[in-house]
Amino acid sequence: MNDWQERVATAEAMIPLIGELYRNYNVVPSIYGRGLINRSVIRTIKDHRFVRQVDGSELDIHLSLQLLQTLKGLNPGPCHVDIGKLGVKFREQGGEDLEAFLKTELAPVIGKFGENGMGGEPQDVILYGFGRIGRLVARILVEKAGGGSLLNLRAIVVRGQGGDLEKRASLLRRDSIHGPFMGTIAVDEDNSALIINGNYVQVIYADSPSDIDYTAYGIQNAIVVDNTGKWRDEEGLSLHTQCPGVSRVLLTAPGKGDLKNIVYGINHNTIEDNDKILSAASCTTNAIVPVLKVLNDKYGIEHGHVETVHSYTNDQNLIDNYHKAERRGRSAPLNMVLTETGAAKAVAKALPELGGKLTGNAIRVPTPNVSMAILNLTLTQGVGKDELNEYLRWSSLYSPMQKQIDYVSSPEVVSSDFVGNRHAGIVDGKATIAQDRQAVLYVWYDNEFGYSCQVVRILQSMSSVQSLVFPQDRG
Image 1: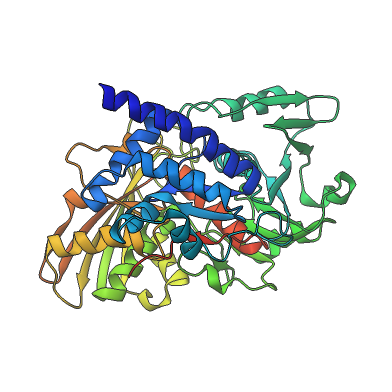
Image 2: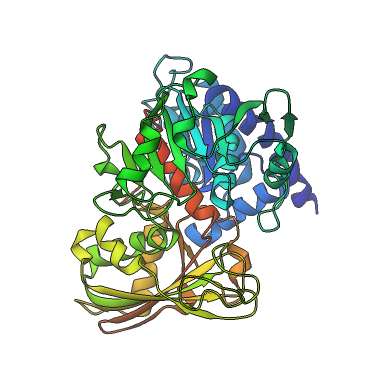
C-alpha cells in the first residue's frame, strides 16, 4: 500500500508538469504512443505498467517525473516526446546523467523555446458538414489547440437557416459512443458561433459552397474538410476552392477519378503544394493498408482477400425501408447485411504494388462502432505465427507506421475495447493464423475515431505544421 500511494503521489506531481510542457512549450509527452495529455492519475500509472508488455518490466514512474522536470529546465521547442522510450533507452545506457542524455537525444529542440518558425505556421481549418466524422475531427482539433498545434478550427458549415445552434452544440457535447466532450462549449446565438474550450468557431449556414465568402469572417487560405460525401470528384469538390478564403480541400471519403487517396503513414509524402484537392480514403483502407505495407515489405504478398466486418452506419436504415443500394434497406440494428466494399481495390491507390492482388467484401453488423478487417493472404515466403506476430508487434512500436498500427495480444478483448483507439488499425495477435505461405490476420479499427485521427494527420501534412518526434526509433 505504501508503494502504491507513493506512485499515486508521483503521478499527481507529473500531471501539472505535463500540462505546462504541453500548453506553454508545445511539447507533447507520451508513453509508447499512449498520450499523457489530460489523463488521470490512474491512467498515468496504467500507462507505465503497459511498458511491461514491451520491455519486460514496468517503466519507473519516478524516472518519468525526473525526465519531465529535467526537460522543462532545458527550455525545449515544440516536439513530441515519448518518455517511455526515452526512459527505457536511458536505463539501457546505464542511467547516470539524465540532463546530458536529454541534450543528446533532443538536441534539435533543446533551448529552442519561443523561437519563431519552430513547429510551422498557423493554418485555418473549415469543417464543411458536422456529422459523425466532422464532430470527431472538431474534438481532436480543439484538443490539440491547447498545445499550439497551429491547426485552427475557424468555421463549421451546415445546411439550414439557423436557429439550431444549441442542438448542434449538444451533439458535440455528448456522444453515445465516444462519451462526453472533454471541455466546455458555449453558444453565441447573436453571432452564430460556438466557443469551444476558448476557440471561437463560426457556424455558417449555407446550402452550397458558392454561397460563402470566408474572408468576411477573417478566414484566409483555409483547408476545407468536406465530410458530407456529397461530392467525391475533382469537379464537385472544386466548388470549395472557388470560395474566397479557401486554398485546399480534404475529402473524408474515397475520392473518385484521378484524386489522390492519401493514407497517412503510407503515401502522405506524395502530397505536393499544387495538390489542391485530396482524399483521406476510407476508414477500412486506412486500417488495412499499413498492415499490408509492412507485410509486403518483409514477406511479399502474392494475392489475398479482405473481408470487412463493419459496424452499421448512418447510410443504413433503422427499420426496413427503401434504399437504392442492394440489401442496405433492411434494418441495420437487426441484421447482418452482406454488401460490397471498394477498400480492396482502393488499396492500389495508396499502395500501387498491390494493384490487382486483392479482392474484398463486407458484412455490416448490428454494432454502432469499431469494425474488423480479416486479411486472408498468400505470401511469397513462409512464416510462422510467432515470427509474424513479433514482426507486427515490433512494427507497432518502432516502425515509421507506429501511429497507424497498434498490436494487442489478449484472449479477452472485444470490439468495445477499441472505442477511441487513435491508430488506423489494431492487429489482434491471438487470432493470427500462419502456416507456410498462408496467413490470416484480424485487424480491429475504430472506424470513426481512428479514421478521424488519420484525417487530422493529413491536415498537418497538407499545412506547414511540423512536429519533430523523439527519440529516433531503433531498427
